[in-house]
Amino acid sequence: MKNKGILTVVSGFSGAGKGTVMKKLMENYDNYALSISMTTRAPRPGETHGKEYFFSTKEEFEQKIAAEQLLEYACYCDNYYGTPREYVEEQLAAGKDVILEIEIQGALKIKEKCPDCLLLFITPPSAQELERRLVSRGTETMEVIQQRLARAVEESEGIEAYDYIVINDDLDTCVKELHSLVQNAKNTVECRAEFIKDIREELKQFSKGEK
Ligand code: 5GP
Figure 1 (cartoon, rainbow, N blue to C red):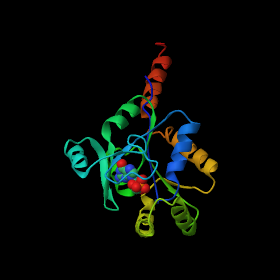
Figure 2 (figure 1 turned 90 degrees about the vertical axis):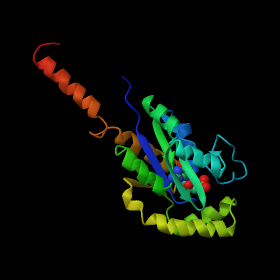
Figure 3 (figure 1 turned 180 degrees about the horizontal axis):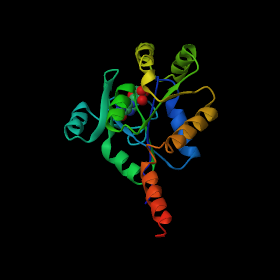
């Protein structure tokens, strides 16, 4: 039987470069499945429905909550964001390593539901670099940038809930580090419980000469 994949949650300040890191991770390695979230925020220029997000109305979003079709959801800067349940469950069962790129409230809810998941926090090397990236992205007004920086202050208080931080200074280094953290996490004794059980059983049979 194929091993189940591991569920990894990646969070980080808005502007930390998570989107670019995820894109590169998907390009470089083929065992990942990136969950596409649902959101009530408006698409940014260049974003398409079904690619970066499933864009929805507040009413549609609330229907999904009521039907328990979201694995988690949170309100972030006045908009809803949530993870569609079905895709994540299907991909994990098919052995894919599923990545959720979500904020901290959602990350904590996932940890509660799936204690075996891995929580990674991506950060730029400094606060100054974060502001520079937010401004140079050119997709948000100064007001929204201020709102996101204020939110980053709050989020920085929650970093200790994560298993590892990954500093996104050089993109390729960051992607390699993230990949190796995920692959190593698959070999913890908790994640390999099934393998351990099987090998114990086989060893017993061999030692009794039954195989
Ligand atoms: P943005 O508007 O910049 O695309 O995303 C804002 C924040 O929402 C980011 O921190 C992003 O990781 C988070 N986010 C995106 N999708 C989800 C989701 O499905 N659930 C939760 N809880 N947060 C999400």
